[in-house]
Image (tube, rainbow, N blue to C red):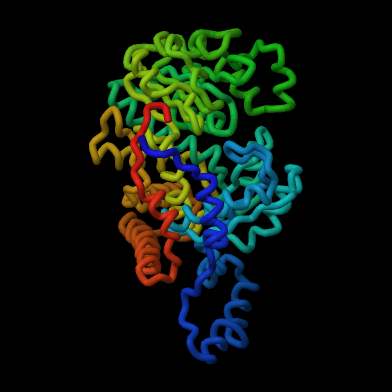
Length: 459
């Protein structure tokens, strides 16, 4: 049995070795002094005068068209909680790495101390001229819902909260293909959502936009099923209007539940999506047995899912997905956010709508279906990088269809552009590795990372 890898220690060592994960590199020729006169003074006054008259030209004359901020106050960092802006910085920098590698998007971390919602929103409004988009990250609930909703209203660039929209979009894609495999119509399925945080509240909204009747959904938070007769319903109306809306619209789901918790919510469900707290045994095998035949179970908590896949299958589940990369059917929002931003940036979109997220989910599902979906493959993996330009194209086309794009292109033009940008990023990275422009990983660490330890059930 292979020795357990201490990823914390290895990560700290490599972060110290490389002193961060991203950098700015020039993209234009600047090898003589005369080029300085073009890119800086006096020549730069020409573009500056144009932008003073027409700010939208900044999407053509600067890198704004491909430049986003990954913004966090560090109040709800996955697995770490409220660790503050400095604590969140390595996470945001890692997100910027994924944006560049998977979507060809230039991204920078922007961590801050503006914890009050209005100060947070003011910060976004103040920095808006610098960026082509904003990716919100790791913000505590329910504040994150208000900030996203308001930012989408106030800013004239795409704003996305990956903990909400990214997870919801990839989950929808997985549900689309899972439903096909079990021969059911997703829009008529009964679905239980376990957990009422950022991911599942966004998923609820997305499923509703997709065409699922709210009465076919039942949502459970830490106090039980959301329904209009709960004792705290009046407080929810003030403290968390998003939960309040769900309680009123679902009316306790298809069973008209006026109480109970996870087992009651799962009884008679075709699918369950859990995005709650690490397990196992948050969902029990006997509760899976209460579900309909050929049940679908998404247990998305990390690092340990709410129920282990083998336990869910032994209890009768047909298809099981988790958030882990070492188990089949990883529900990974990294399949979504780089491509969605690639698409909206390429058409200079003004926002990202729920219908654009649905278009991304449908293309993600279609890619996997064309590859050949089965019980252990309902979603692409991150290694299948060809999926990213396709999802980018679908997102961009939807933005154009909704009249939210500043630039219009054909499907072929969009796909070619996205493909070339992403492929160029991959090619440059490989070149930097081969030529030593990126320092080689220290040998002792490289051997550990490239080793293939024997997998252990439940590890």
